[in-house]
Length: 468
Image 1 (cartoon, rainbow, N blue to C red):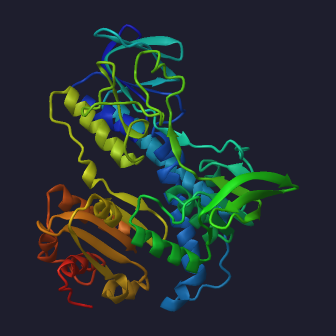
Image 2: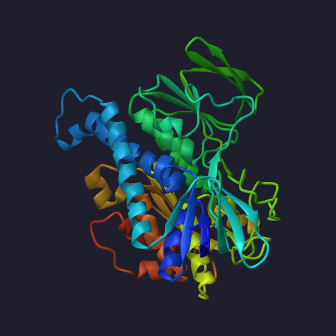
Image 3: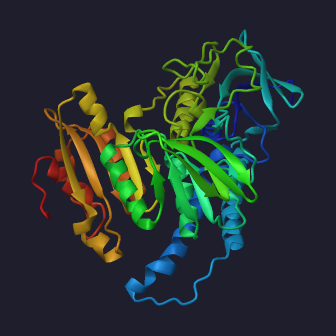
């Protein structure tokens, strides 16, 4: 095996890495993938997207049974939580999907090199990569090592009381009071899981709003809905440290507006202040690969690093840290290496927050466009008057569409509401092909469906919505 020269050697088995490996194999390349973990799938399948969504789904079922079914005439008495069973189901989902990737590797004849990989020689036509003490050769190398949770120097992880998102998926009992540091996607999703299961949840956010980067109107609505559900927020507040008091952690913070200091007593603290690229131990800098101040590997418009023949994708490079973005980039690299026109349209990459209601977005926000001076027109429509939403008893939220004032081309779509993560796919597809709000408005949407709110929002861009 060590004498084999691979066409492509991928480092990292997350979405970007394994999709690149599969596509490259489909295109006739001899491919190997190096992964230090015990399973394939990276953060997303093992300790990120998939297990968190499994818990979000299970906790929502519990919440519905306990608080919502009676409205539908379904009376369920003595609803109990079996957390061990919930965690077991989550683990089973992860095993099925990571096992599925392993099956795909065998199907596509991809060699899985097990162990930590380090680039030892990136010069010349053939690259050298050491994996667990064995050197492998490859014509091209793709770095897809992903990201890891960021830490706070004054509040280090202990894996039990002060945890990252990884440990927050494994609590064996529901926290009495979970303090979440960071009001972004990860903090709100995992906060929602434990809130539904009975925990008191307080979110401490440095900025004066939630989910920075999302449309501000959506962020405001999300805070209102989550507050109604019982989640508490301390916005524009800075965490300064913590002390231990028996089984409790005293989180120390300061209101940035008033300067008032306050303390939150928690039995669990989740640090959810973002993620950072993983490049340590890779040998990247020693090989001459440039890494910027943010810790990201610098790439050109074709994903090639500063070293010819070495490429990088996903969380380790610029752009949003999203699994599907990494996957698209991985496929694009494989196609570029095969002489095809691999490409990713970064203006049409959707993002989703899997709270309930869900939040989904694609394209530019209203704030961004106004800052650029782009002439825009905006239409929005609430789920409150949608027939399907009323039938579901899920009427929180709205759809917002932003179009160019002159051309009518859709520049951004932002949704908070039931199944927003599914609804955003239509918006992404239409934006990929340069659709106008008129195109959406003229498209027949089935009745009664949640998607009708999308059509009405498009009509509202020109103030001609029908049902409001």
